[in-house]
Amino acid sequence: MQEGELTMLGRILCYIVTVDENANGAIVNLGLLYLVYMGMLAVFCTNAINIYAGINGLEAGQSYVI
Image 1 (tube, one colour):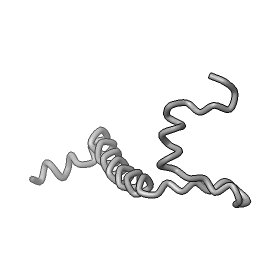
Image 2 (cartoon, rainbow, N blue to C red):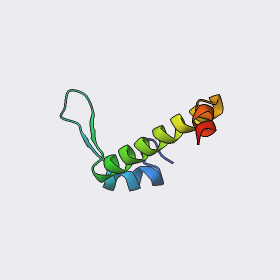
Image 3 (cartoon, rainbow, N blue to C red):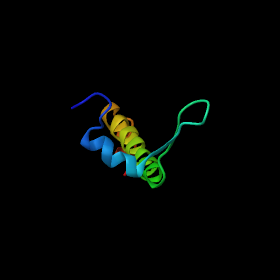
């Protein structure tokens, strides 16, 4: 690989992700990939909280009532 050459993943991401180089800071437009990321983040965070609560036994009282 020569210097400045993109990898295979970099070439694929060039079609999906755009970078606004004229901005003061680098602004990355993820497009539809952003919605997928945020949806997965919401699911993963709620699952992580539920798993953490189950490990600590916070639902033990609730399951005892049921």
